[in-house]
Amino acid sequence: MWYLNMNAVMAMSGMILVLALTRWWPHNKRVLLLAFNLCFLLVFSKKLFIFYVVYTLLNYLGFLFLCHVTKWRQGWFITAIVLNVAGVSCLRLFGMKVLENPLFDTVILLGLIYNVLKVIDAYYFAYFFGKDARVKLMDYANFILFVPTFTSGPILKFKDFMADTKQPYRLNAAQVEDSIKRIIKGMFKKIVLVTWMTDLFNHMQAQELHTHQSLFLMIWFYALIFFDFSGYSDIAIGFGRLMGYNMPENFKKPFQSPTLTQFWRNWHATLGDWFREHIFMFFSRQAPSRWTAAGLSVLIMVLIGLWHGFSWLYFLYGLYHGIVMALENLLGKSTVNKKKVSRAYFYARCLLTQAIVTFSVIVYSGSEDTVFKIYRGLFHWPWS
Image (cartoon, rainbow, N blue to C red; front, side):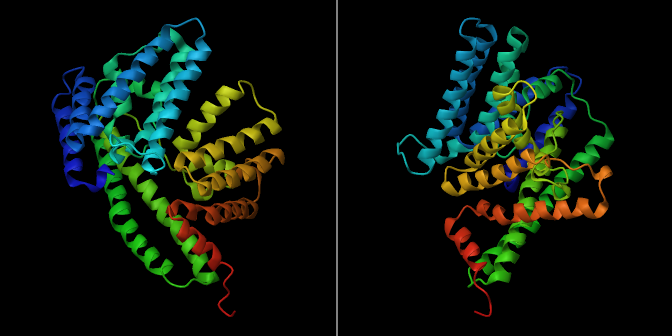
């Protein structure tokens, strides 16, 4: 969201310049970044600023408590997670107008579904490492409020971010060049490609649809979503690295995924990784059986669906992907080694995976009317 606002882009560019000019100061990345994150939110929205100051402080206190507490440790851990999930769920209900309160402002939801995942990751770290997980409030706040990834990821890992925090701000010419190229590529995707593709999609879906048109729109929207999501990730990764932090890749050649299981390791990779790591870690400490892995696949994908939105369409989207992944686990087909199969077989599996994804990705359009219209169009033969 920030990256379509030139003032926000200029502010982040200015922050990078300040970091570069003060690189002689060993704590510039920590102190100046916190000041920037807080000032950025304050200028954007006072309500957002107040909400996140309170939200960050409360969770930091919970984080420290979990680092030190020994009695009923698991209970406190689960309580912290449940409270955060309940909080974000309630705010989503306010955003959907299911609940109403004059204090609610939709801007408060900005970035929360991403940041609650980071908060929970920090609780996991505190639970498993105890006192060794302790960090200063400044570093914890920077982790939660990190502006480049605030609204749409990639989702940062607590331990990786803290490891980067300990390193001095240092960039070489090659890193700067690569990051700037990444930002430019992302801007081109978001501003040029996505804008043009969205206009064409809206124009076509407003007409009466037949089978070939619905199929085209499904494929077209899939490409649109890829350029949109990956474009944002490119920009966030570029700015994040220029601020001195290693940003994880979010898209790892997803179109070359021979199974749906591998697809979710390559598409929005940090989201899929987060759910796999935290759900498997919680429910299955040891290597799971095929049936356990299948059941957890369904659970994880349903949660990912609901994470995108509280609607039955997103629930069915997650269930659909979960069932396919469960079948892959049960049949022992969850991975395909490109080096051990023929080229034709590998790409046939890739094509099948893309067909499975294309059939469902239209749910991301966010409009039930659009989704139903395109699905109905599949059965509207042009000669009927």
